[in-house]
Image (tube, rainbow, N blue to C red; front, side, top):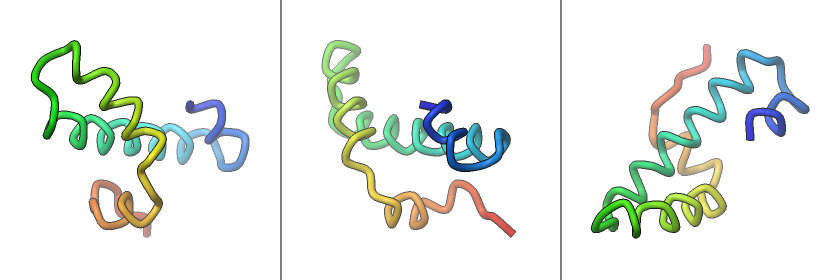
Length: 64
């Protein structure tokens, strides 16, 4: 995933963006998961379905 980000932005920004996406997807999956067996598919679904608006709204990373 970081490789995809690195194809369009500098390496540090790519790493931060990918980790932000992972953190948000994990948080979304955690809300519905009942254990590790349900967490993984929910996490993968969240990775695909998160929008840029959701990431901005999460406020995890603030770019100046």
